[in-house]
Length: 515
Image (cartoon, rainbow, N blue to C red; front, side):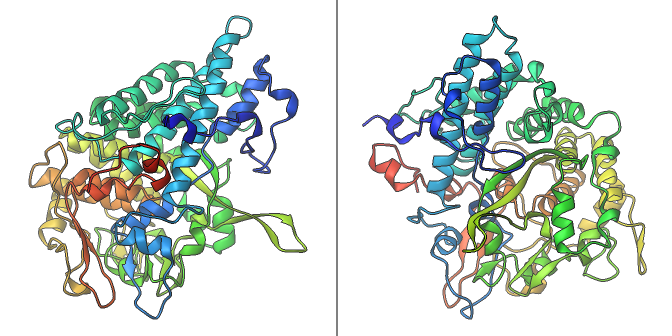
């Protein structure tokens, strides 16, 4: 059975994501893609309608065990235990697979039409957008269903089919090297032709900053550090501070207002916003597994860091803007948006907004690339910009630090490595043992600076799932605790880091991920 039958190619019947209503339908007269505007409109369907946060976040070291007093959700339980998932609902691996490949299918249909119209119309911008949509969906699929990029094993690790034409499909997975080469080719072809003028609201499309931020993140993962720095700099501009989030403006806001402000297209820090169907925000509280007060206190927002610790007298703006309870603690950047289809009946669609690319995260991409190239001065320059944006000048007796090599080295010299399986909370810390996959990190200054950058990234992308990609890349080992059972340990190079392909796809002849 050919794998193409598992893709959903009926683009004319797809609902596409609108900046305002989320559920605008494709008009019947757009089925014939004979005008530039019709292709442009179709491309709004090529942005994924799913979110990886629940699968990737639950797989990461951000999640703790709340005990038997809390019920078990089958999806969370299987993911937390690193089992093959047989749940097929919203936010499941099946849902991600279907949604991302659906986006690829729409991108290919729009790309074909744009290429045929090019000459009659100037379609370079639409061609670039289609290629970026395709590359992004394939990149996200690779992060979930493949191992982390490792040049030493890229010909051994399984890739994924990369459809290039409408209706094209294959049940041949190929290698991770071929997959990354295809993603890279699409990105490089698209970057020179980004056309922000096509859209009234560019923050919901591949505008220039977003495209270069994507290229920077991809090249960081791909270990092309010079390109990661070049593209991040293009995205950030000559004065990165103007595209970092000003958290001082959030101090007096409540949760609802924080959510609204954080996700505004007018926010300079937001490069690309992708609204998606997801109930991930509903899993934050009162679940057996979650980012609970233990994780918050000892590993993330309230953990001991160069700027301080705790929820009081901590210069980190996030520290006293956390919401929830002991089972689930969160900063409300990804609270749900509910779209009513029937207000009387109280039914509709649940959405979250993914801040897919931001100035803050892109700055940390560049800082990491600098550190991996041993350019510690430039890495610290970026890290200090992040500190200024994310920490107030003073809180109690704690002042906002100015990071130097000496300060960072002293902080980590005084901090023990967290064991893979801590005996108690006092064993936990933000210092993790690195076992990098396909690259090297030198002991001392380089490792210490990277430790802090990864902690900053852990905070920056909390809830979005990207932490799981970092622990895969750096071979960070950790335990998921279970009530009354031995903990499940995730190890460096763990094959379970590639989430299992949905069973329906495997049953159709697709090679499963090894275990």
